[in-house]
Length: 434
Image (cartoon, rainbow, N blue to C red; front, side, top):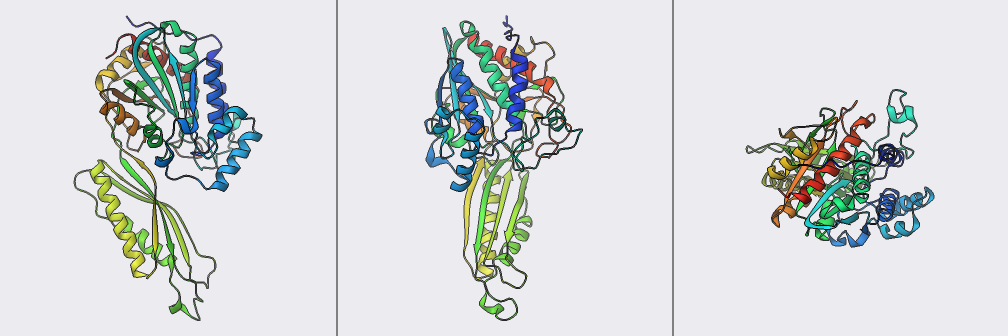
């Protein structure tokens, strides 16, 4: 029979307070210095073995790393905002992953909970009916906000960690808490995978809140991920006077424009869904100057790895063709990648059964359609390839606005039940592995 894990009386308030603190001080991927320092400090205070920074992220696997100037500025800001100095130095250079390990008193498997921690480059709404603005925890970093719920994920992860640390005698085996940076853009999971953080894991649970789902419902099976690839593209041309000597120029802006048009014209694949999007385009310095530089940020997605690879190959051909047409060089830099993975039903069933003992929680094994992309799939697949099981679980919550919008928010009443459900499930998995 499943043993319901009780929560310390002061934990519910602390979970909400943690979420609001992270929401107020959001940080972009690979620059989550204050967030990661707070997480590491909390895990250490709970008596866990804590590894962080380069110990849990493989440097050679990182892509889409921010500029040195951006990293240095974010590091200095975190220091000014009270980041714990001991931990802050561990993350210098943009290595912001944290892993906490809690060893139980009885033999059993290694179970892991993965939570992402990064924010998005979005200006948050200050409208009076936007709860973070009304309640005083709206983003204090203009142009950056938690618009996808990663503040919620981090707070839930820390809440579960605290609940279990206080009941270590109930744990069979080991529980690992993986706090992953840079999920946005698909940049954080692969470096942590390649550092071996899940190589000893038998069962892995990754979580996400919201996803256009019903409050109070846990969906232990999420499906329908799209594999994706992110690319940064730079055309380098030759400036010239647009009226006096146009033939002497090499128009980088025109090459970029031709490339963008061509990208959207790529034939879709018969075998499944595919996507292409150019989200940023920068070029030019004056109306009578032939632009010598153009830059854009793009992505492709596919329902399978094969479809994604097809989209990558076609995108590269289109970009190269546009560069050739304008007689100028182009550089394409890989900036991130996500994959696909399926949840293991036996693990999902064990989590659903355990979660049903928690008040105000309902579970369903009906797969939750994702439709987006997620780099936790790389961690899931590593566990599965080594004989373990993994699931991606949606924590149901009403949202007043869709993800990645200035008014995104989560119903906070769903956080504490999720903490109790996950704590109970992690202990049950250790006692009775699927």
